[in-house]
Image (cartoon, rainbow, N blue to C red; front, side):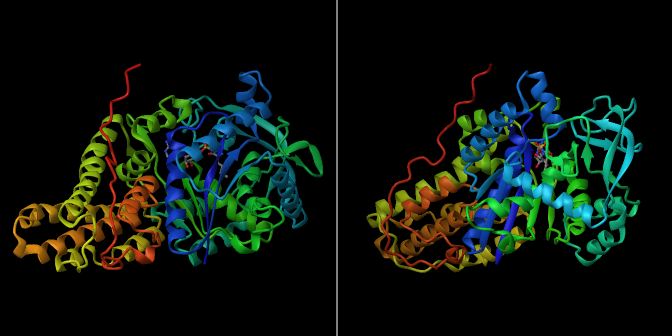
Length: 505
Ligand code: MSP
């Protein structure tokens, strides 16, 4: 089965922060998990480079938009590599191949009769690159997201007849109750549609940093139309000499935060329908990472530098923490104290110590060879069909719920060691078989949780699996008892060394 998953493409007007990393890591977890299931996966991320926000930021820094885009796109690529994202392609909307697709689709919308010229007037937020309706704006004509005062703008633009898609969009929602998730967001998007769709302008005349409107080169394609099309255009040129569109379109799921719900859940399917293309199968909306109760965002200045965080805690710890601390789909606060506490109590103590203790006992009591035995009924109960449960959760994009399912087993294994006290049995030769069973169960349990944890913590889980002498990484093998005894175990050292808190600056 093909599985095409995307992150939003990030604006290059600023540097990457932890909010961007959050989405990228969540999508990476899903992509890695689906590969473990043997699915045909394509994972796309990239940068949104055209439009007013970037043009303005470049002006303020006295560089050209292209220079700014080149510099920051590199930073976004670097952070994706650094968090171990396994994206299959990194799209930049300044790629000429992307622009060619935008030109083509905009032409098609016009040929299909969905484009006309009109005068636009309204409250415009240059940071959102979006006009706001009267009931969205805050007192003093301020942007509800950026809190800045909005400009009253009017200009002659080419319009997209969104209103022509009123019924088709409503039908799309009725036919596909999972089109938008979680369901609160589905209701929100549908309510927006039902409140009556208004046409929006497809072009901008005041800027030149963008893709020209093919029949009116004085104007450029509205940055949101340009940006959304990345999901479609990338497939046509991600692989040289190969067009992946047939294989991966429509996209399985676009993962985004709620700030850009309207564009993805309303504009995007309508644009695709207008160009005779299939809408995506699903849009999933996660919540905001908050710092001190506020959305982490560049404009509010409360951002954490992901590079600095990874220098301190390590990549896997960051990936784990983000998806553990905040229930995926809801807003949640993160903090340095929260990092430290989960790092110590869950990663170092529950997982790390369990691993080193178990390996040490196998080394000490059984010369480093996992005994041939079977897992106890107690462990069988604890594990159940955990792989199927994790898969079912991830089918619903429940990324933190899936992690919790695994963590319950990590905790259960800790309890098991504590209760069984193998170090006591080791003193009594009569108990050799019982000890075999415990050590086998621990090795198997650790193997299963580690295979399941690979998408969240690829480096650590891989290290532990290697130390367990196990080379199968498929979801298929994440079953207690799937491997027999006999493998020779190595050492893992400290999986999560004590961390020095970052120096105060
Ligand atoms: N360029 C547009 C998206 C175009 S997609 C066709 C854009 N870019 S952005 O740089 O502002 O990135 C927004 C996305 O970054 C959010 O939808 C979310 O995925 C992620 N996040 C940015 N800040 C975040 C938080 N504080 N918390 C959670 N996600 C965050 O919008």
